[in-house]
Length: 136
Image (cartoon, rainbow, N blue to C red; front, side, top):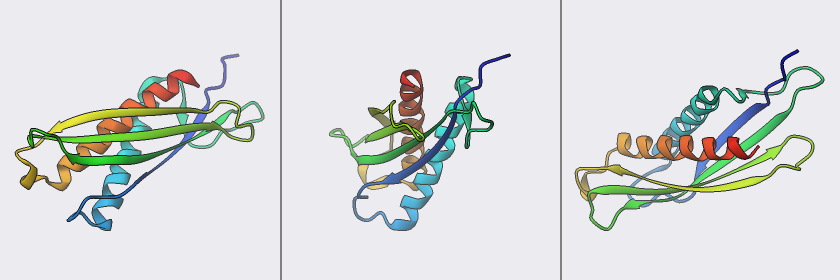
């Protein structure tokens, strides 16, 4: 009988968005991060997305927060950092925190679009989730 893959539930949020970004943009970016994390989980083949099933099912919750979002020093890239934590449901025995950083090219600091921010959030979420899955 094949081993049961762990099930993983994900949630993401943003810490503080720099002005002039608003809460609507934050919710859109958090949703993009969740989609990217779920896709990374499926792509890894080591886990499934959702809640555990069956008596032998193992589940984890992953929560992530975008903590830095700002133009890089050269004003041609958008800099971001994310922290993702994972905990085994009901046990809490396997906890890992991953800090991940990424850059997304932009036309200039004054021309940051919502798509740039979504792309950055998605890249960060994917990288962090893959690192965390390898530790679970």
